[in-house]
Image 1 (tube, helix red, strand yellow):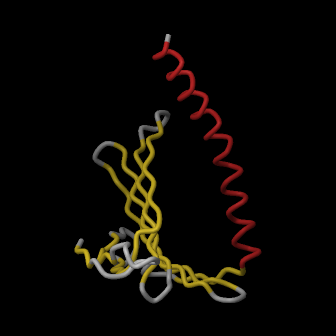
Image 2 (cartoon, rainbow, N blue to C red; image 1 turned 180 degrees about the vertical axis):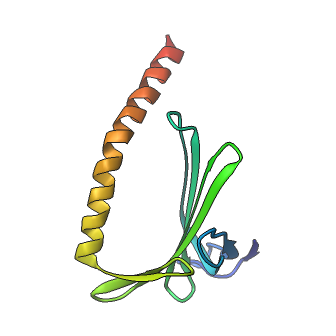
Length: 134
């Protein structure tokens, strides 16, 4: 990964040249700003997940996610092109176009299923934190 010090929304954020690895298509080269990242560990499955979201210089979004359990890992990368009525999501080998209503419905279903699993995980984290403080 290389950095250019010019750019950013306010002129101070670096423009990065990165390649997001992708086990399901071509790796995704991106020149743009890192606008979000997250890393979390699931105690139940032992899975470590790392996510990064970039806004490319051409305005498209690039999303990379790496999930690993032990030495096994899965790396995925997506480019999202936002349109007026829909967006096109590409993983390097397949492109899908979603209307925003469809996309929000799909995300709501995914979040609802994750909410059940996350509730147990949050409860476990709170219980551990309380035990440490006793």
